[in-house]
Figure 1 (cartoon, each protein chain N blue to C red):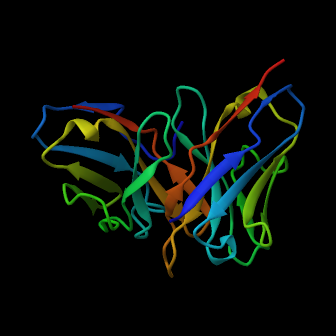
Figure 2: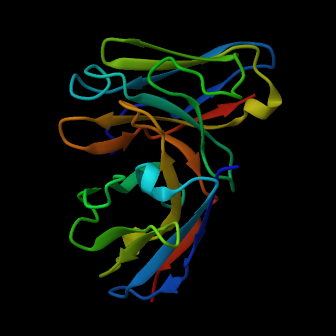
Length: 110
Length: 121
């Protein structure tokens, strides 16, 4: 059982928008800004698409955006493209226990 | 260009030991915290261990504590994961990952392609 809860799958048509939720607790997502989202294509290493809840690393499309409300973080992908089809994981660092936790992953189908 | 290349993955019997190595290029491993994350077949990502830049502080997931040891080679610019008393549930692709640079940055910004470890008799 993963520490962070994500939906198993989300699907949408090209051009549409989707939002993936990631629910934690007041000790991780709700407590600090150390939430990141990772895109993972099979056979490749994961790639960070959002860090620190809302920051978009250099080189990441502005179609990716992050937000948070209480103990739930969200990743929104707008203008879906075929290349966005992948598994997406949320991850968080827990400052008071020095651990990193990931969600169970969400398979995005375009 | 930052690159991470894992090596050492293999088929190993339960109870055996294996050492994974992560060769870094484009940066020095002593400048960033480094970690290992694994993915069991059909499962999601699971954090395994992290070592901080000072080299003396390391953290482990409960599932591997006491069996795995992370270390850093400053001269070789590598990060290793020594895995002992391996179990079938340790079977996974093991990814090496670089911690982001900067104060209060705790995510992993670069990842390797992974090394497959299979524990089976």
